[in-house]
Length: 147
Figure 1 (cartoon, rainbow, N blue to C red):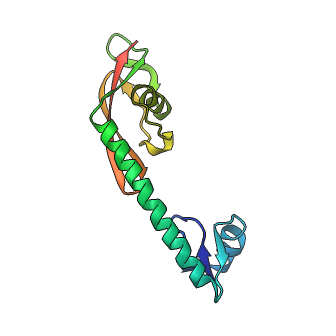
Figure 2: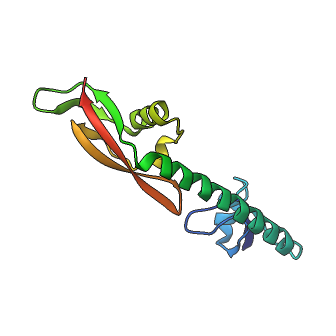
Figure 3: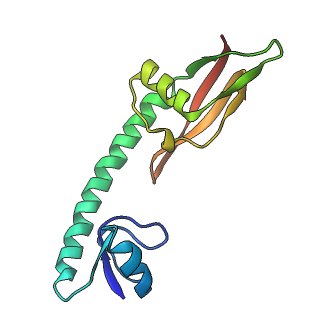
């Protein structure tokens, strides 16, 4: 079945793409979730408008992500956590704690899902990859100190 995607679907396509998918996938998942609509003769123009709008939004989002990267890359983020005498943490520092410290120390708001899923378990300096946009990735330097 040919459908016009209304949202980005992993391994299928981006917003505005006209793709051929299995009938069941379209009927049971894409269309009920609002992620696609059945392609028709008049939907080509609508798909082109969606692609143009997506391109403009994507460019703005990429610029914002690059601006965040320039603010964050040069500054280390300090996170305090309880630790033993030999530097092992009691627990770990999660992405949520890193995001909270980032917001507090730099004013940059990121979603925890934008960070690589790492749990820091030792005192010291660590590098955590952040990807606020599909085309922009940068390291965040996190200094874990004993509290």
